[in-house]
Amino acid sequence: MKSFVLGMVATLIGLAAGAWIYFGTGMAPVATSAPPMPMETTFAKMALHARIEREMPKAVPLAADENAYLAGVPIYREDCAVCHGLPQQDKTAVADGMFPRPPQLFFRKGVSDDPPGETYWKVTNGIRLTGMPAFQNTLSDTARWQVSLLLANSNHLPAAVTSLLAAPLPKN
Image (cartoon, rainbow, N blue to C red; front, side, top):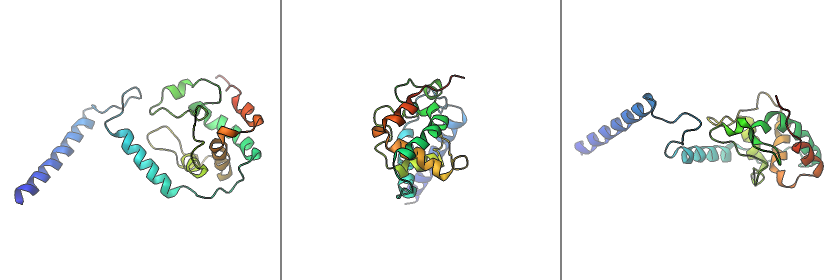
């Protein structure tokens, strides 16, 4: 039994030393162009989905209607489009240079299959190590819900909303 315990302790020390060397000597991929570390994507998604499922609001305090969508358009265009794109437009250089790549929310499914509370959680809290900022301190609760409803219903928006969204972003 004593040798088993010593073997376990030696294994844990070896793993810790290996991790220290891997990260401390700069062997870990940190550039946005580098491939992810083994299991990085799996563990990150697992933790994110578990946290969101536990904390996201289940009830939506606003009606999912054209007024909410129209109110969400300028918020999305100002704060989200540079990373997440606009309908019928190419990905921006900012989005193309990020890792992980931000989802283009108006290309294919986007987040229209997510409950609005999930998108609201992401907008409110951000997502660590992805470039997704938290807007809790910069957008009102109502504004965060408006953009979340816009995105949750992005696959069946009224034409007036879609045409406002599809306008090109100004070039700086």
